[in-house]
Length: 244
Length: 102
Image 1 (cartoon, one colour):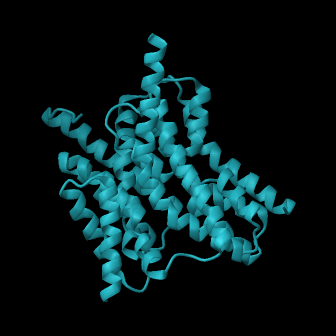
Image 2: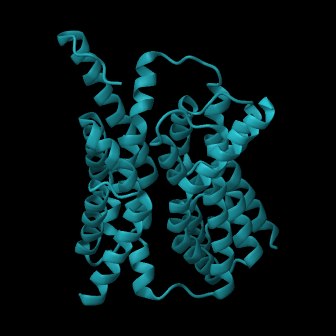
Image 3: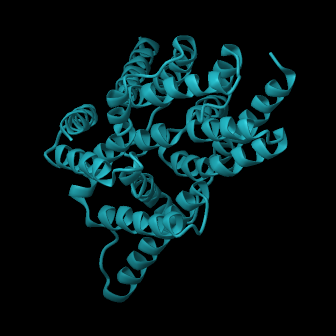
């Protein structure tokens, strides 16, 4: 009976994960569709395109690889660029490792495959611990949307009507805002964290100081460290209690 | 399937998976110093700030107001307490209307 109870809890956590992943699924739809279409025009077969979405599962770097293929860039440079663009996931996984419930390493190694900017944002802003079931639910929905719509984009070989395509481009950003604002309303610290990182990132990217992949990591670390330092100093000097 | 493309995909997959997976292996069951833990708790909100800005302003390269309209719509909906899905669908609708009329 205890086992039944545990399985019931796992499956409801999995369902909660699937539900939380729906927004990501919607957001990936236009991007994956366009990726499939562009992959086709870059000369990749449907198998190659879908395989790339299945094995890499990282939007920005997949797009970049297509433009590099079009330039005739060598494999080594494409792989190296992918590494640089995706190195930010290291930081995200480190943060999630603190948030996820303790479990077999095998499970963690499996669900870590599905960590993207979007799945990370959904899991990290969730209240309380993230269970293994929840992780699998969110990642599976996001992954399915990405892979399936890559294939459909290649198959139909056309994108959405332009107006719809353009307006759907806001989806993932709107999702990020929808995830950020509830915490932002509750805590000034969150407001400072997000604003400072946004300012750093704007300076780095608009100033042409670094490529976007690095800019996001660098501004995140800078903001997270600076705000934490301020908190520690405040606590030491004025005995202000550390915010939860 | 061209073997060159296949190797490229495998290479891209490996260099993407390793940074995603490694922290779970490296820091498994490890108690990090409190300061680092604090920084890691800050990471999600800082990341969201950096993911949103300045990229949202440039979803339409030749019309900055398009992105700003989307951002304002999303912030307004989220601030009024709308569910994430409502925020997303609401912003898409606002922009569809925007490009229909302007």
